Image (cartoon, rainbow, N blue to C red; front, side):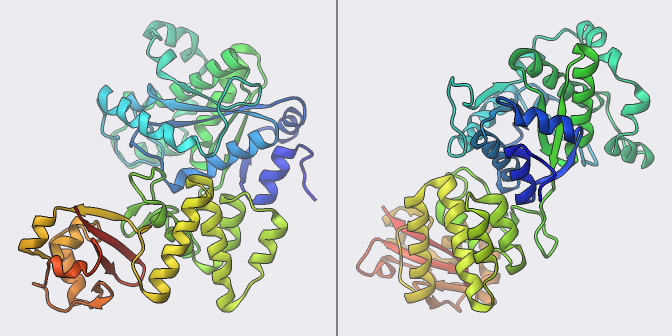
Length: 417
């Protein structure tokens, strides 16, 4: 039995999202009446979001599906400072051009999950540089700084840890809490936004915004955080041996994205189905009850549902078909990640090690050679044991691509053009 009566909070609770809430009863009343407005902020530190951001995106998705209005805030202004939360040193400062490029890439991630428009429950996207960039220093001190005490700010976990460890904590970073809090105040004033959502590492910043809205406008505002997700084995969600699992297709192909979910640990399947898909809780319960080899059916259902949300049903079907071909009959499939190579390079021959680096299956020729030594390299499903082996036009067979495999789970095509 849920402790909440609003559709939004009861849905989040049932699916395992909620970590902390500032005012549970008042927030529940707000979400149960009318169309609640909530926002999540994302700094533009990279040109794509990754799977680790999906928890917050899915929370906005549930908000909209429950009749609320989501606001996506892109931190064009706060990125110029850099969020110090859980960092042991200052983030590298990006140029305006880098921030602008990253913002364009990040915007792509939200289109599949939210409906944007001008309607009362349509999502909207804002850039906090629109107000932070115009905010005068004296105005900030008088209007915002007066509501924050150094006593409280230095008690924040990140600040306290850095100071206790005698690590530098710059005045620039010290202002981040004030800037994020001011974002909440501006969204409250401009759009009637009363709820900020984030990961549990943002709790201190969120509480700062809630307090500022109350002190500056005598307004009711709330904060809600989600659990920071780790895998059953303790790994960070969205991190693999090959790096982050990016949401943008130009950074991680639909097949690779599908394969990431297909490789979910057994103990995580039910939890990930609740967090990262739209499948009903009844359907998830049935999938979660599968045991032994049948758990693979649940993993495929997870991979299909998650990939459909981001890339569409056709891409998910293509990925499943490609995986079936790779792991079943061992044949090649066009849905595999594909890298072009000039035909004349194959005419003169290219090292298999260099081909693996080119296709992104290794970070360097040296790493590819080590994979060959370990017996983890196959070309067209044939084991390669010679570190100096080469690829030629003959390896194309009757087609125009060579299948490359690193271990059992990573595959790519090298296509002659």
